[in-house]
Image (cartoon, rainbow, N blue to C red; front, side, top):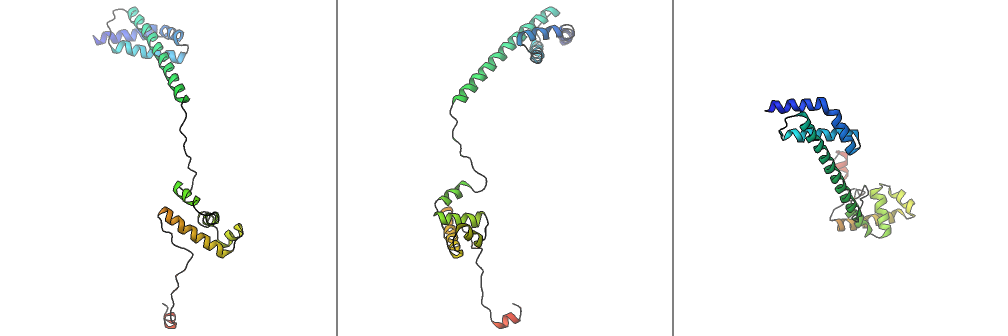
Length: 184
């Protein structure tokens, strides 16, 4: 039985394929789509192993399958276009764009600082400017920059739950002259 339908399929493709594609082109309008439709119709027709006795019966069945598949495809596209139109009509939820660099929590914490503290912390900690350059950029004394940076960093640590070590301080330990001579 299987050899019979396989032989019928081979004969149908060999003898009637171009006519089937021509029929499909009239239905769908595109040669590429027509070839796809014929392929799908052949698979659908012979996958169920319908009982055909002649090549003409098989061709008629494939022609009907081409039309049915084309209608189904058209309905699917129409349905998809409608869904896209409905989805496009919905307002998109506003999304907050995160600029590269600092996280949102750090940006919120920076906004709680006084303007001079914020400027000093950003220039010193984020932009990595020296105390002298920061003082020149802001028109402040170097002592004021140190103070604003320290106060701002302390407030940021409290807001963020972090601990920042003051990297500008140097631990000083008094030594006596004998330690210096011995190289300690």
